[in-house]
Image 1 (cartoon, rainbow, N blue to C red):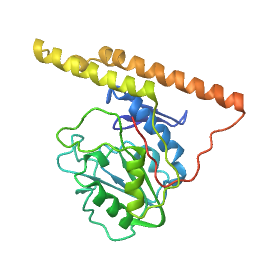
Image 2 (cartoon, one colour):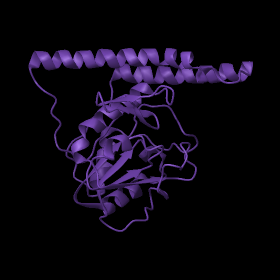
Image 3 (cartoon, rainbow, N blue to C red):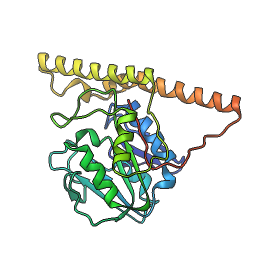
Image 4 (cartoon, rainbow, N blue to C red):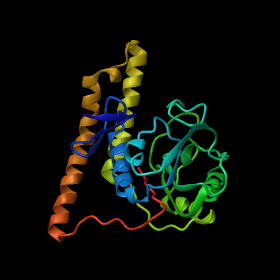
Length: 254
């Protein structure tokens, strides 16, 4: 039996998480972020704040690991607010100081008007020894218009964290050149389909059909399969297992 939360599904029998292509066509971006979050499970504990939680897909991962969680959203979120506990801006979070052991902030900072203030709020809310897990896009098309304001290099996001008084224990990049090309290619395909739908007045739109969605996702699935195979081969050759260092800031780019 599969459990679903937003675009994320979980199979308890196989202990496997998957991205549902019927809910999102951004397979690569979401899958790579999922892999980083699964590596970060040891830091998901205590009281957790999920900033910009959307449909709260990652609750499938953290619900069994934390004592309690709170999700926030803004009124104009394209994902809706039904899964959020608190409606507020990330720049002004209505919680007392040092309330959370873990703060999760995935693909949110680029949509805030003042990321410096957001980082100060995060630092204010973290308990001593708490952890922030944060991801931001880098090379990625404008999305969720008109609330898409920033792109961060690994140096930019690191600077934001340090200026807020956070200690960076580790940083990651998400994806590579091929992944970036595929993500951009996916966006071009989606916008082309949107243009065709508009010109030909197709209703329902082409990308609502399961077979069309399956076809769009094929290059992304093949890339992920090839990437996993290569990682397994390298692990076998070097006789190493995957070790993740302790960290409080996770940076990811697309």
